Length: 182
Image (cartoon, rainbow, N blue to C red; front, side, top):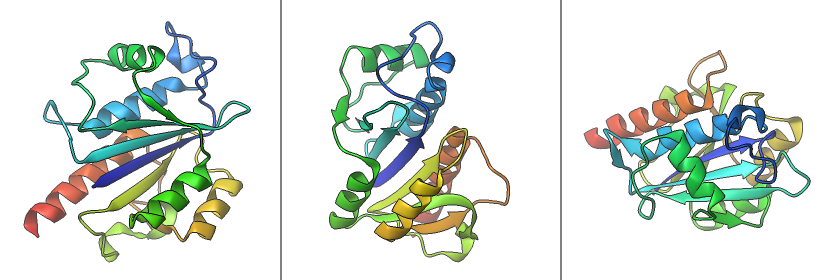
């Protein structure tokens, strides 16, 4: 099982403008992230679960996308329609609850963070692993403190901040290469 988590501090479900997701708390970042995480060579990654923590409204919510239960989507518009129709599971829990639940299920969690340990120097498991990635603004201090309390390891793919969708592509490539060799 491979888990990818986007922590968005600007996006929420209540204010999505279907004609302009970028003006809706940067919901375009959410759409790009999910699409890049879900697919490999135009097929759905069935071993992947994506959580998007939406912290841009008064009540935090989490969107859950299961690779083994989602159809192939051609575009951001298709994904947005799926979300707006309510065809995506919405969890009524917060970021810390999600992380604690994953740890209880035996998922090893890592956070991609510029100041973390180089990913090449860490023994990243092939299964039951999760990666937390920040949005366009990065993590808030509260997010970092929650992750530290839960025991998340901070790792880095380089000293610069990267777009969340790129981080997802990198993580999938890294795991695909590492786990194919194992």
